[in-house]
Image (cartoon, rainbow, N blue to C red; front, top):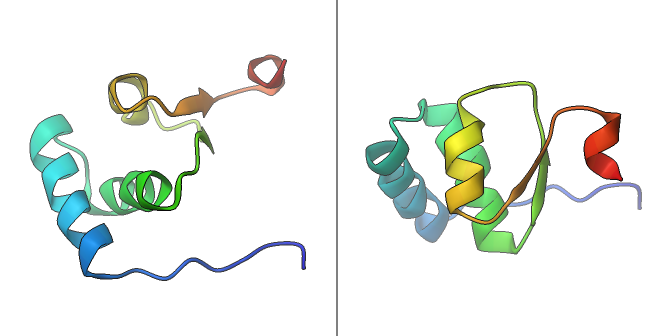
Length: 70
């Protein structure tokens, strides 16, 4: 299987609310970050600058270009 669809659950939703308050994230961004944290995903690829502070603090590597993969 090339990819897996990860389910939202009550824990992910509650965590996303915490992330909205902590980092002033938009709802979709908070859900993405909460899903990563919940499922132990330690990298996220995005050009969205809203993730910059949150990913550093939450110890998730933000990949913005090919050089970030090295």
